[in-house]
Image 1 (cartoon, rainbow, N blue to C red):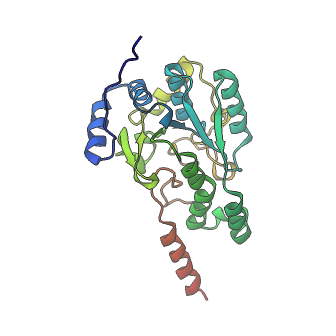
Image 2 (image 1 turned 30 degrees about the horizontal axis):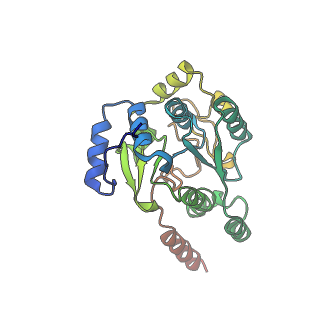
Image 3 (image 1 turned 135 degrees about the vertical axis):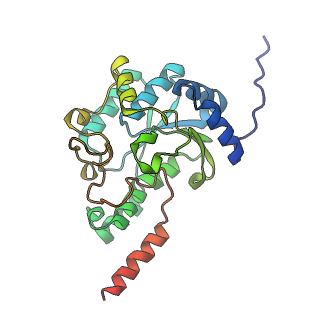
Length: 265
C-alpha cells in the first residue's frame, strides 16, 4: 500500500499568515484548532501547561485527539503541593509522560544569593527577575526543537490579554507559532467542560483560588475581585504577567533599579 502524501503546507512565518489563520479559527471550536495544529506540526508541537483549569481543559481535549501529544511543564521550585498532587493525577488518569523542566541551578543560586529567597516581595523588578529565572528561561529551553506550542490563556483574564489572537508568532522565542485555542472562552465555559468531562483540577480552586502559580505569589481572591487578583497581589499597578506570555525588558528593569539605588546613595 502506498502511503498517503500529505499536501505541502508552507511554514507559518509572516504576520499575514498568522492573521489569516487566526481569523479562520475565530468562530471554530478549540478542538478544531488543536486538531489542525496536531496534524500540521506533529511531534514538533508542544502543549505547555501549569495545570491550571485552562491547561487541564486543553490537555483533556488534546489527549482525546492524540494521546501522544508532547506535554511540557515548568517546576519553579516554589509550586504548591496541590499542583504536584495534580501532576500525579494527570499521569495516572491519562497515562502520559509529562516533561518537567526546572530552573538552571547556577542562575537560581546566583539570584537567590544576591537578592534573597523572597526578593520578589520587595519590588516588581525583582519579582520579574525571579519569574525570568524560575519560569521564562526554563520554558525557553523546554521549547527548543519545537515549531509550535499551545497556551491556555483567555481574553477575559485581564487587560493585557484582551486582544489576544488564536494564532500568533512568539517573537521572543524565535518566531515559534503560538496557539491560544481558549482565547474566546469564558471562565464558565472552562468549568462547564471540567464538570462535563470529569477533568481533574487543582484542589486550591475549591478554596477560593482563581489563578494558581507559585505558592508565595498566589492567594485566594475575595468576592468581586478580578480573576487574576490573587497573583502578585502586592503589585496593584503592575500587569499580572510573568514574562512567559509577553516581552519583559530585564536590561531596562535592571537599569531602572540601579538608577533608583544610586539616587538614594
